[in-house]
Image (cartoon, rainbow, N blue to C red; front, side, top):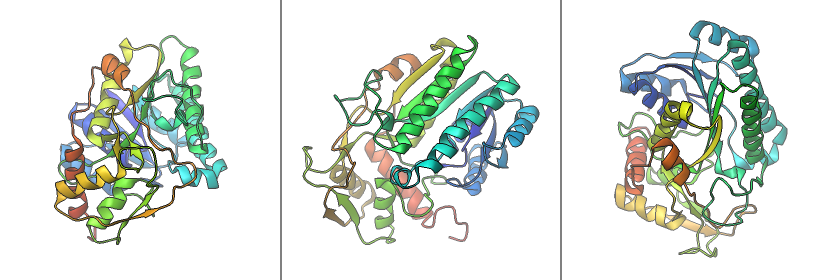
Length: 339
C-alpha cells in the first residue's frame, strides 16, 4: 500500500515509518520539521534498508499536497502533523487551531480532490479531560481541559463528519496516552526541539549529565507515592498500533476512536526507579508544588483496541527505559550529526 505520512519526521511518525517500511508499504513523508528532524528519516532508511519519499512542506499548503497526491497517489494517510505542547497551547491557542485544525481541513480537502479514502489520525487522551471515572474508555465524556486537547477533538469530529459523507471512506482516531522509549537500534528516538514537554526526556537528560535533576511537580496526590500517575506505552508498540489500524480499516466501523495504552499507571517516582535500574545511572530529583491543570492520575482501558485491531503492547516499562537510555547515551545531542 502507498501511505502518505504527515509529520513523519517526528518522534512517533519516524517510528511508524520504520514499521510501515518493514511491513512492505511504500511511504512518502510530508513534514515542515517544526517538531521533526530530516536526519530521523535518513536513519529510518538505514534501519529498514528501504527508500522513502520526503518533502519539507506544510500540510496547509494545498498546492504542495495536490502535487504529492498526484505524483505519489497514496491509498491511505497516517496523520501526525501538528503542534503538541499542552502548556504552549494555553499561551498561543490560535496557533494551535491554525496548525492542527486548519491542517486537518487542508489534508481532508486534498484527500477529497485525490479520492483518497482512508485516514488514521494521531489523536490523544487529552480529548477526555478530567476523569469522571478511571480507566478512561471510549465512552468517557470528551471535555478537553486545554486548547491542545480541543484541537485534537475538533480534528476527530472533522474526520468523523468527512467519513459520514461517503460510505467508502474510513477514518480511525487513535487516542494514545504517553509514548516513551526508542527504536531498539538506538538510531531513532525522542529529540524534542527546545525544552522537553514530557517526563522521559528530562530523566534521560539528567542521566546524560545535561541537567542536574528532574523536577517533580506535585508529591501530595492521592497516588501510591504522591506523585502523578500516567499510562506509558513504548513508541514501537504505538507505531505497530497504527499499522494494525491501517490493515484493519476495511473491517472497522467507518469511523472508530480507539484508546492506545497499556492499561495501567506508573507514577513519576516509579518511572525514575525503573530508569535507574535499567540504566545503572542514579537520577537526582527535586520536589516542587503541583502545577495548575495537571491531573493526579489517568490511564487507559485499551480493550476495544485489543479486540478490534488484534493488537496488544508487547514491551515492558523496563524495555522502554532501556531503549530510551540506549538512544540517549548514543545520541547525547539528539539528531545533531556533530555529536
